[in-house]
Image (cartoon, rainbow, N blue to C red; front, top):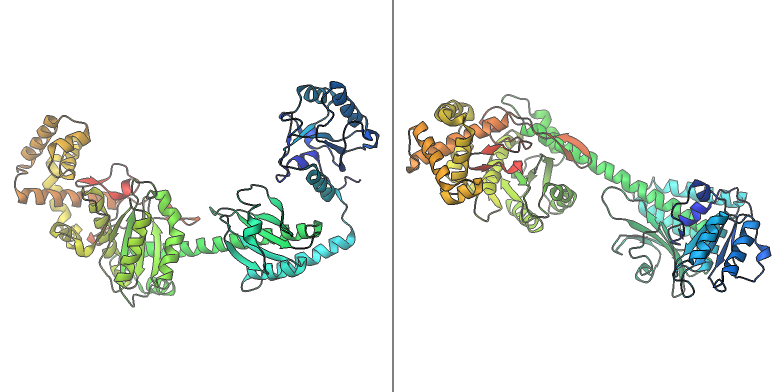
Length: 566
């Protein structure tokens, strides 16, 4: 047979469905590029002289117990300029005989090992199929099928159109099946549960299916994004269904279905990037800025402020399933669930948090967030005040960030807080103008602000609710060392931390300093879908007091690390 098609020994061994391997793992390109023109099954003593050039001789190992028999079959194949010797492991030989391996190596003949679950007829079938010549009539038929499949891409539902045309082309049923056996789309009656038993976790690119009178093919659809593999399954009761033409059509359809999936992924990623950019601009609105164009862009994306809208900040936690990677992976599903519930939204991301502008009934939003926490129980969710137009977005963002800060540093087992839950000190920070109180806060803390050991001691003391022992343990200090530092703070500031007024003043001043410091830092670029977006930079004025630099490991609000730090 001709080898013009370029089928090689490497191609045969690389056919994953057969699970073949070389006895010598160190074979080089010379062996892999050996042409293969035919394959036949012969045993010792049976017409070895009929072996031809570029042929793979297959044997089950019967009669190879003697060294002379092993040498006979190798010599015959070498003399005929054969491609390789194939030995099926199983009842006769669990492992290839060492003398046979050595003799093949000495003669320069590749020894291919065939596992017991692969029949010799399967190997022969693959070789015959891959080496048969392509006649003009076959080529024209396949070209027409490819043209028909490409036209299906213009349909409103290209995947269903592809399946419909492919089913009629090969005269069989067809389906796209998810990695868990769930049918995503199909055309024609096809017994998926029956055929799926032969697919399961198989890693081969193409699998022949035969079960209870059904014959078919399973073709792996090219992976895209982070989605698990899917399969294209074609089946019919015709005994000769899985011929070269059906195989070629199956490969074409699988490639086009994969391409449609990639286009959909790109479209979704671009949509997320647009939403992220609009929300980013809304978060960094400055006083006096023109907001009409931005409001129009938001309205075009569904957020028109016709009903209640709030900013939600979702901060990564330390528990498995709630870290930043898990939050990123959850975004597509979370967006789909918001849409299903009738919530309009814009989403962007920072280093450790997801920021959402959600519009819809408060009860619906709370239900969605409760479900989100059930999936990611270690996350922290801050919810800002309701706003009536896009100019109020920075204010709601500040509220949500302050709430997330409070939750992250709190000893209470709470993971969700809204603006309505704020205590008096948080309300003061939420409503006071940072530009008005910042100079006073800087002046108040000036005696200790340049002493990091004292600031760290003060933060730990508040973080652990005035418990010297717990705070010292967290800082890996002796409790007397911490007591000494606290006393130095009191002397430097001229106050005592035993009075509520002093505690409140110190808390508010330190929080204002921390928020101002971190608000001046631009958050690092963060991914949105597959497209890189710059996280919002909210600077200047109390409207932006909650903007935090998520990249600073040591950035802190008074009493605890900022929630974006982890």
